[in-house]
Length: 208
Image (cartoon, rainbow, N blue to C red):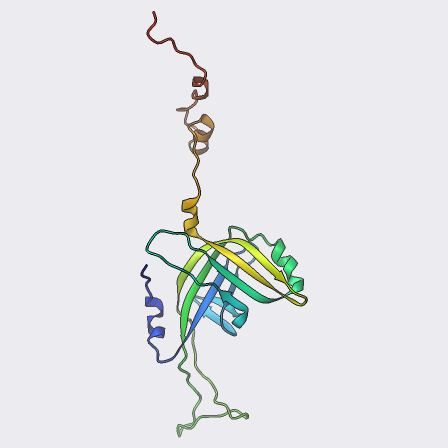
């Protein structure tokens, strides 16, 4: 399927870019925001915490058909003492979003009036590139299904399976033509009030 990239079009056209992924985990106690770089990053007014190589996102597939394709988000390097917090936090069915964006990697360095670069004591250039808000597009939206934990002696890894929103199309919608079912939708409706009585009702048809 085609996807609009207007929000990141200018970044993609830069001579040098840094692609990135960002993740929103909308947990009840506190939403968590991560991205695949280092330091803090602002996207649409939300600050994402950089996790670097400790955040991995599985390959995501899109087809021309309406199909529920999921994703797996893996967080590694988690201290073992925080596992109990992850396990005790209600997570199933909570909303998750995966964003894709790009940073214009063309750097601006501090210069003197004569055009020479101002250097640090170590001899490096001073980066003065300023990015107020990084553009990104919504790549995937789904719900957290389960967590698989690989516990190590010092750090652990959590792999979260994310179901696509389209999974709702595969869930059966059961509705019975009974008075109870009808009143769950329309409390004052009495149209099916006598349906149960009709099950064992005997009618004498065609007799005088």
